[in-house]
Length: 139
Image (tube, rainbow, N blue to C red):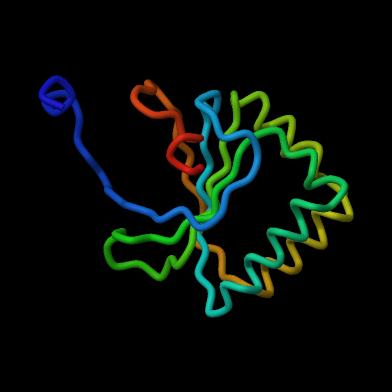
C-alpha cells in the first residue's frame, strides 16, 4: 500500500458478504461486472437467478458468479450485487452477444425486473492475485 498510495486516489470502498456462487470459482477471472440492485423480496431474486442458471442457456455461462449483499457501502439503496467474472473482455462480449433474442434470457430479465430495481453496473479488472484463491474463500 505504501507504493500504491502516492500514485492513486481511492474513489470508493465497499465490503460484501457472499450469499451464493456459481461457475468455476478460481483465479482465471480477470474482468468483472457488478450489477447493483435493490429488492424488498430477496427470495424472488434468488428464485430468478436459480431458474436462469438451470435453464438451457443460463447453464452455458462461461465464467463465475456471486450474489452478494453489502456490509459497508456508504449511503445507498443497493441491497444486493450480482458479480460476474470472465477470463477476458472477449469472453464477456461473446457471452453477452449470445444472449440476444434468447427466450431463457428474456424470461430471466422479466423475472428479475419484477423482483428488483436496477441501479447500474461497474466494471473492474483483476490486476494481481495473491493469497488464497477465490475458491478457497467461498468453499
